[in-house]
Image (tube, rainbow, N blue to C red; front, top):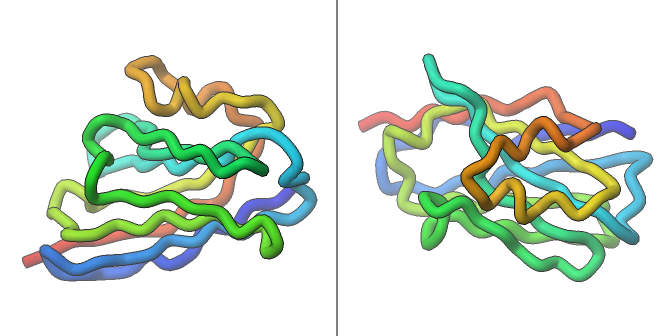
Length: 129
């Protein structure tokens, strides 16, 4: 299984960005695909997660309202749309996948990343004024 995160870059406050997580070798017939991020000097944290194939989204509390996760099962790709970007969104964003339904963990306060077996390499997002 391989995951590739892309779409990161440098944006200004208030702009939008869409990240993509393209997978290969991962069956979209069951499981969960999540986005995590690691900000400078901070631990990695969950952002959002989507179950496949039904597409049920889960969000960490801070991500509700500005982040939208979606999946294109035909393209084996999951997207993370980030709107009205803020400086605190600056981070390396990682996507991860697992055959089990771990999305509720991602959205909760517990450390959800340890459950995921497959990881992409991360894409850097920088938000500045």
